[in-house]
Image (cartoon, rainbow, N blue to C red; front, side):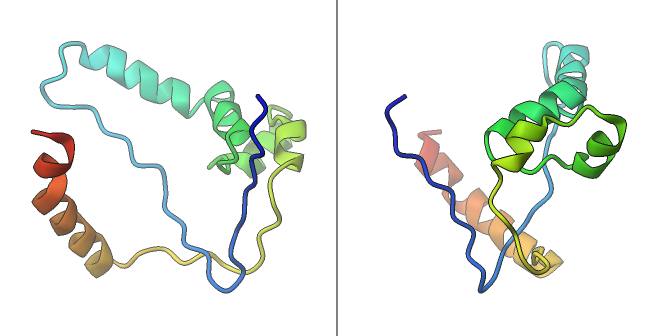
Length: 108
């Protein structure tokens, strides 16, 4: 409350990425982790992301079946053109960079 929040999308190039979720292979309660993922991809979970200005991955389907939060969708900024997704080489370079700096960044 009281924060002047603005969302901007550059029109000279938009970068996109799909949601990345994982369940740790050593999770103490892997079924609970899988349920959490199901929730995140449910209409309720997608609408929560939408309220945070993240485009719901199932937005068109949700609009068709009437589960989309239309008020939240109306607040999204206009996006023009096709978003660019990272190539496999770019993803690998990012992975190496994160691996190299992760422990130092998070103190592990």
